[in-house]
Structures are given as C-alpha cells and as structure tokens.
Length: 327
Image (cartoon, rainbow, N blue to C red; front, top):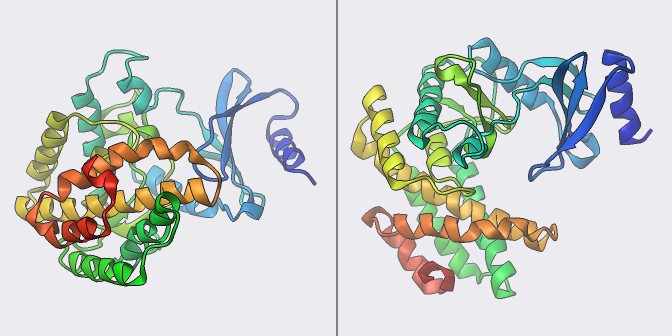
C-alpha cells in the first residue's frame, strides 16, 4: 500500500470525505507535514515514514508530557503510531522567524525572546516523569565529532588525519568533564525561532507554541539557551542575547560565572556539530541547502574561541588550518 493511500485512509477514518489537505514546507528529516481543512477548522498531519527510520512515539511521549504540564505543545487529536501518522492541533502560521521578519504584527525581538526564556524557566522547574536518553558527555562528544568526520572530507576532499582527530577528542573530553551544571532537566534540543510559534490569544509562557521536540533528552539547563540565542538560521542581536542571559540568570539565581562557562563550551560543541551536520547533508545526502548556514555558525565558533577556556581548542583549529576560521 502506498504512503499516499495510508495517509488518505487515516484522514478518511477521522473526517470522512469532507476535508482538504495541502503540503507544508519540510524540515531536515524525512518527516513531512500537511495542513488539513475540515468543518471550518484546520489541523496538522505529521507523516513520519517508518521505512525511513522515522517514528512518532517519541513525539507523542514528549508532547503529551508538555501538554499535561501546561506548555503549549500541540494537542494530539488522532494517532497511528504503527504507520507513523499523527493528527495535531494547528498553531497557525506565526512562527517566531516569521514574526521577527516583520510579516505579522509588530512585536519586538526582546518581547518574543523573553517569552521563550519564560518557557525554559518553567521547563527547568518541571520534574521529568518520562524516560528519555541522557545527554551525557559521550553523546555530546559523538555529536561534536561530526566536524572531524564530515566537514574536512566535504571541504578538503579528504578525511582528517587520525592524530588530529585523536587530539580533538582529547580536548573535548576535558572540556565536557569541566561542565558545571548537571543533566537534570528536559532539553528540547532544537529550541530556536523556526520551531517556536507566537500564539497571541494565549497568556504568559503559553504564548509560545512548541514544535519539533521528538529528539528531547535529559540534559543541562544551558543547552536550550544556546539553541535559542545562537540560532544557526538567524542572527539574534547582541543586546537581546545579553538581556536574555541576564534575565534567565536573575530569575533562576544560577551562578553567573559557571553558567557562562557552560554556555561557551556547549555553544561551541553545538556549532561544531552543526558544521558537521551541514557537511554530511551536502556530501552524503546530496543536499547543499544547509551550507548557507556555515558563515553564521563559524561566527559563533570564532567568538567563543577568544575565551581562555577554549585556548586548547583554538590551538587545535590553528594547527588543522581551517581557512574559514579566519574568514
């Protein structure tokens, strides 16, 4: 049975024949989305093909946890886990990225990001009652090695020499061991403007609609702050970055020096991961779209490498002579 027939049967069972559906822009995975119009209301159909190693169960588990704990995660209207289909509440079209571009009502960057921080403050106070993978040092190290495994091959035409990779791993092992904050809260991982919705008719932190959280883990309070403020897809103004860090630390009363140290380390780890991810998409998947993100991501790395905490890593980058570092 074709994928289109499976989806049609799923929708027919819920709506009968009185609906229309239209495809929406896809993300970096094999998942796809459609907006379904029926009886004067709209819904979102998520299609996560099992044969492409996609699954909806993690989304269901995390989504139901968020929804029950008073976050604006989309309500799950109907599910077919076996076939990888979910019918979801529709949050509309007001992605943060769209609001920030001025396409909708005039809401300041500071206001939008402050609400996103409010979500993280509440999230970090919420006891996690579901089982999820731990975002431990080994996982962070594996992700950081996407740089050494893919970036050099994509842009230098050859793999990185093994002794350089061994040194890179040694440096990151020490950096990750120096992290101050424990893995004790829900980390959504892809917490950035393209995955946040502005829900004008809601109140407080619920004004922020949450999307794309199926890869959630248990990790550090710092990680989603980095995802939000060091966005690979858009520039966040320096003033807003500092305001939001100050706002979060003031509310949570975290040690500022320790928080900033972890922010620098995890911010750089995440950027190295993204460089490798983009290179892999281009080299392995023949999808060069993400290469346009590289200059912004490199700017984050260059900025953090000026910090004495990362001196060994800066020396390593100098030795392997990545020309982009100084571009």
